[in-house]
Image (cartoon, rainbow, N blue to C red; front, side, top):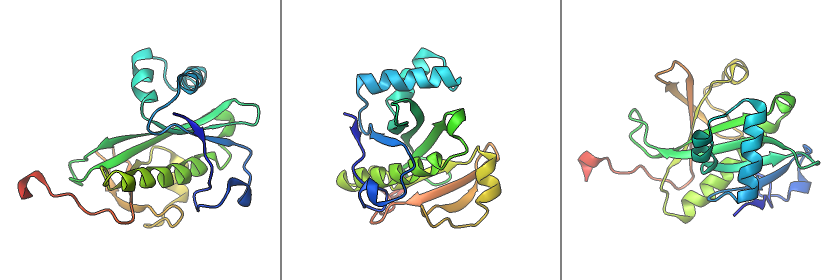
Length: 185
């Protein structure tokens, strides 16, 4: 069921931090029908996704979305559990899409920070089905601005390049332990 996020990524009430003008709606682990319809309409209008079957699959992966003060969807982030062969560990593969009008704002970072807190809390409460979050940086702005090996807020580290030649970053959840590989069990 979707709910409005009650805290900032640092655990403080939303009003205690910088008000970026967006309302954050938590959809993890399940998105309401109304939110799903609004998100699919947003994807269609922005040209992000148009295939109905693909949208149905992706909307089930929504972690959180942001709405403007007028209620318009401005950005959506999703996560899907996966075990990348190079890591051999279960991670949440995180994606986001921000509407064209909001790309010059801090919305993508707000969604990233808030959703990572949410995913970590969920993982901790469920015996760590995934040990962290994996990013594959398609956005040129991140590759240009984020050249440090370690980011500190949120705490992602550079772990190499994907098969597509894109930078990979990982955030490992506090308290998570490596899972035994099939060969070790």
